[in-house]
Length: 324
Image 1 (tube, helix red, strand yellow):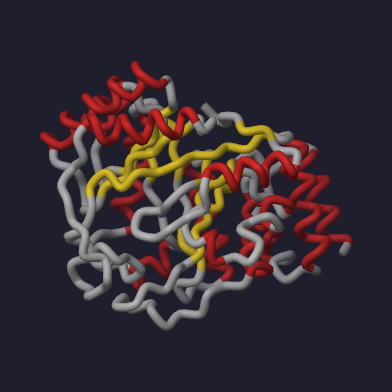
Image 2 (cartoon, rainbow, N blue to C red):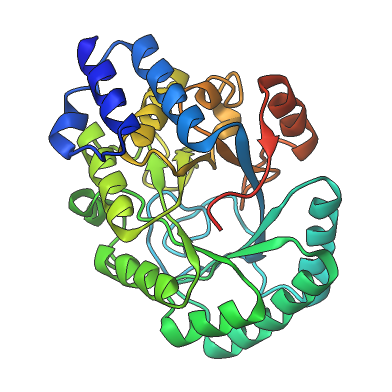
């Protein structure tokens, strides 16, 4: 398809594509699209692969009504576990284990709309200990915080903030009603103002269109996002999305490829739901994706770090940090 080659060369020339151009290739022949995306990835990112792990730093009883989430108080799921913010000792324990496995980035994720000021102060002490004792990079996902809180987190030693947009502005109201898309955007802007890099993507398979996914990626690009998590919806019984169809491997590869065309230098990060793919992401890692969350997810099992390390070695990737 000539259009794919034309747009690839335009990107190679240092230009960013417009939405209209992207929409012209969303249904392009699969092999041509994914191969071109992989070439763009290789040109701008080389063989670097940004692997991170996450820990559920505060679990359950979430006040928000995000329709995909097992931890929301609005839904009756099998996720019965609930606990307050983990101690420094527990957060440090996993950080040390992950660092020994060769992981370079460790993310602390907490349930709820946002951490309180007291909780932020507590976790800042944990971040300091993790940085001092392991050297591992720390990413945080603490909800809808403001500039002052992010400045504290930055001073404690964290380098990145995660806050998913989830979908397009148009579709987000179908996903959650207890906070707004604009609140998410303001959170990401505040984190960036505090000097932190920002990580933001979404969940694929919520009922959104390909145009919604494209719009989300363009919003991320406008905000200066350097890491885009691509989550595959795992339909959890008890949530409103329990009967949603799980996207196919080919569909997820196409999404990763399109995101690569939109943000050529980004870490396109396979995240939650990767274990549902037959090949655990192998094809996506040859379709423009070049990052992943390894190990267990928040409330579901993931893929072990050891398994991922073997796969990356086979594919010729080198685990290293990007976009710091």
